[in-house]
Amino acid sequence: MRRFFYAINSDNYDHKSEQFCRPRLGSLPIGNDVELPDSIVHHWCRVLRANIGDQGILFDGFGGEYQVQLQTISKKHATVTLLAHISDDRSAPIISKIGLVMSRGDRMDYAIQKATELGVTAIQLLSSHHGEVSLKPSQVDKKLHHWQQIAIAACEQCGLNRPPLILTPQPITQWLNTDTASLTVDDAVSPTMVALSQDPYYQVLNHQADIRLQMSVPATGQPLMPEALLVVLKQDVPYIELLIGPEGGLSNDESAQAKHSGFAPWQIGARVLRTETAPLVALATLHALSR
Image: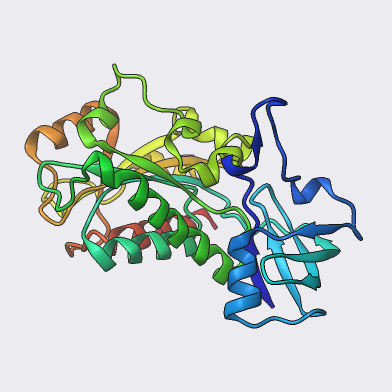
């Protein structure tokens, strides 16, 4: 059954009443009709050639999802009837934010897509001294939207109903600077995600993590895993931050700053992982250790 993300975004904001005009799916009773946004009409009704009576799933990111049936289809509009609410929350039992130095092209798309499938909560985009990508101000909005859509599409495919937040790029030195107030998640997301970022589930990201880990290359005499990690993973819903550098690694100054900011080195095995592989290995390992 096709799944679609029903975004509550800034395009639906009524500045006079300071409320979002498009209702949250979770606030609507079974049997109500809902008008679909253009993006879903285009994909479901035009590209996939859906017909009246076809069923699908809508989720808005606030938890759970709805089974729906296409009720009307016109040239530019379509409506669905809410048939049933499915309360399953398939989010990972760990709140995780990855500070990920941006890489080029498909490698970055791959890292975001697979990290989403493995349940990451947010990805903070970073630039660094040895990084391959440094976006111009005119490129930021377009790339942020692109990467957020990669994450949403991965959610639609894999069954997650809370998409991760992709956070606007920052220099790694700024993100690590504990003396500088960081942007809140509300300020750092694309317009599509502003309303969703205000949900309590995501507001946890504004608080201090229970542990901060830097994916590290193998080093003699360095412990494989911080002892505190296993303790943190015993908490009900631990919040873990991960820092993943570029292919060339962090500079000496960046590594020193990460250590000063509380990032403990964590090396998984004796191999050096690519920057798009490291998030997947780290997330999969965390979930395995938390069981």
